[in-house]
Length: 175
Image 1 (cartoon, rainbow, N blue to C red):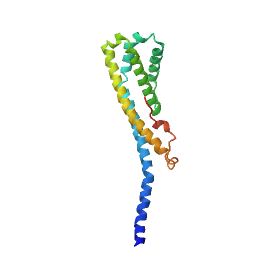
Image 2 (cartoon, helix red, strand yellow):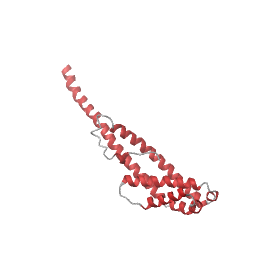
Image 3 (spheres, rainbow, N blue to C red):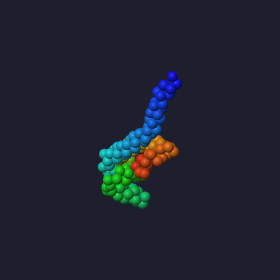
Image 4 (cartoon, rainbow, N blue to C red):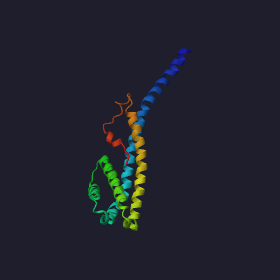
């Protein structure tokens, strides 16, 4: 009787062990795909509203052009918006930086009372602020996935199995 139980339970235990060993590898693979997709969605969202950034610059530059830091930001925005790359991580980082600088420009511009009464400026600023909030939510999701992926990939048993040579593609930081 004991031999039959042993013969029956041994394959189940082996299969369960294999399943438990493979599960984190599958989870890591899914997380990688999820993170890349999240970054692509963020790039797409920014691209859909990117035309608002030159509008903000054109409307506000007469009011804030005397500020040296703002002028540097405008130059940086122009450089980033013209830079084309096929590398996802570079494109992603450029888009996030472009959005961050644009938000700084909007915040600086809002200190000028004439700009805050300009309807075109305020409409564009509101749209960019809403975009920033959407991107922030997506980045929070991305950060959760990144942290879980790092946690799984740093487990001693999986360190050599889950390849993280391209870790930069799977890391999401705060905006």
